[in-house]
Image 1: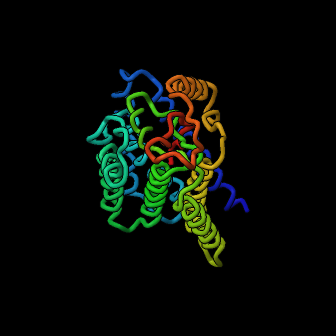
Image 2: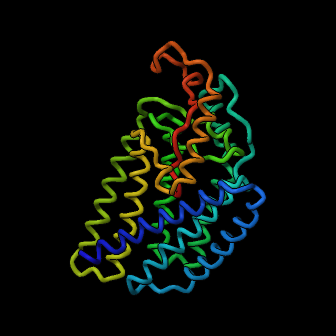
Length: 290
């Protein structure tokens, strides 16, 4: 049981700490952003070097690999949230834009970020020679589940998790939609739950070594956290408080500002609103590192 509990706790704590560090850095003055990006870049280089020279024999190797992949992902998230690498469009979605036009505008807002994510994933493959399947699987989970989150926010969910977006990324909110459900969300939740269960089952496979057990539990734990992020899209939970009072207060201040900027409430029910008018003006929370 200890072999299962330790990597699960490690994944949870490292995810929580990494997310908190990024949220804290993004909440500082923009004058500090070059320092934050520089630190993240050092972490990126160190992580890629470590992955290039790491073994895959012991549980410790799995823990190091997990931390390295989070460092690579954290660099991309840092340059995105600081506004250094986002997309070619940095304005709100034009009123009345719908269909493929809205899809194109949404892609333009994050296209450079998406390309950087692909480059980061490719760098892991290159430095490991394609042999570290654990590191590649970790990054794949992060990428697929982040893509799923973005698509669900675009198509529409009850709770749009983005109140901790910094002011220079506030235009992204106009591309989110609030509605009761979209067809993709149940698929995302069910699919990730099934894969999580399969990964846990592999961890308990007869004859699995300590590296395999730790690796599969870390993969399952990361996917479970991503699943939790999707569930937050259904539940009005103020998750900003998980990272302390300072970040919670910043989120609450952003929420107050959003409410003040809201137009008068429409008299029609949400189901009668057109997609353009159903777009959310108030965004409750951010999903964080995943």
